[in-house]
Every structure is written in C-alpha cells, then in structure tokens.
Amino acid sequence: MDPESTLLSTLPSTPQAVWEDRVRSSEAPSLAQQTPCVFDPDGELPPDSGATVPGTMTAKEQLLQRVQTLTEDEAAETLRLLDQRTEDPVIAAFRDAPLDDEPWTEEDEQAAAEGRADLAAGRTVSLEEAMREFE
Image (cartoon, rainbow, N blue to C red):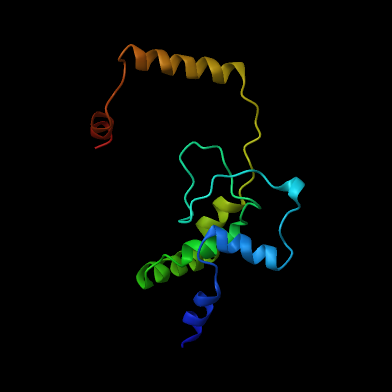
C-alpha cells in the first residue's frame, strides 16, 4: 500500500468516527460541554435543525474529512492553490492588509443615500455605456 493510501485509511470517514476517535483519545468534551444533536449516519444534519455535532469538529478535522472526497485531479489543484497562496505576493498583500477601521461618516451616508436614490429613480448607466465613454 502506498503512503497516501495508508494515510487516508487512517483518517476518520464520518463525523461520528471523529467523535469516536476523540472519545478513545480522551479529547471528548465533558457532558456539560456537549450539545444535543440530531445525527445522521451519513454525516448530514437536517437543514435548519439548529443541531450541532457533539464536540464540534476542528477546522483541521473538517479539512481532513473533505480531502477524502477529492479526486486525484482535485487534490492536485488544491495543492497548487495552497502553494500559490503562500507564494503569490498579491494574495499575501490582500491577506496581510489591515482591516478598514475608518468610521462611517455622515458624508459617507449622504453619498450612499444619493446613490440609492439615483438607482431607485433609474438614473443609471449600463456597463456597456460606461465602457464606450472610455473608448
């Protein structure tokens, strides 16, 4: 068996398996920390059930679970994107940019209200028209 198959065979296949692994390794939350849940053996929760899986999975656990479903081509593309994320200076600049913490001013609100009023009144220009102005 190749190393990748060996690794994948050791990964839990469902949220229930992850939970069972946690219980075996004593990483399970105490009863006081658990939340009741509706659990489907396929790992699906009913839509809008508000239920959670006991001992919510970490991001790494969720990632490992999703990796198992990738085809070889999808896995290769994912690796390429992960490598690009750390190598591309534009992506790094966006990732490392500070949050915009400038407060929203009354002037900003007036400009936004004017724009919404223009939109509601139909005083707009299509993208095609705007592009023609720059030709």
